[in-house]
Image 1 (tube, helix red, strand yellow):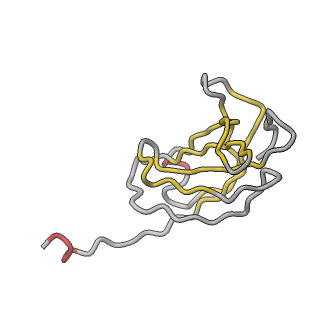
Image 2 (tube, rainbow, N blue to C red):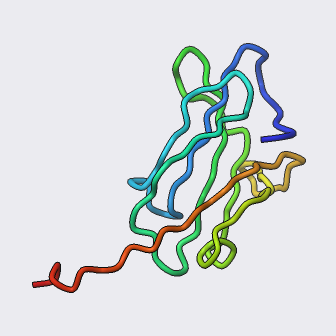
Length: 118
């Protein structure tokens, strides 16, 4: 992440990702002293039209703190070929910040087993 406005000098950064509106799908990076994670997570159950929500938080003393920015990656940008690039981050009021998050999304299609429904 670039351009974040940390509210304290002695913090760590955490990034979360989930399918929009489905908090049970959430994955979270380990805390890092700089907002660079190189983290790989797996989110199951993505269907057409699902967007990915990203949020960057400050962490102090092991507790999740203020959200420093959040962004959305619409399905049309990653569904077929994945995505490798930056997304803009917004504040809690929906105002665009100068901050961005560099992400890479790979998509693995898993065939539905027809015998599961029986």
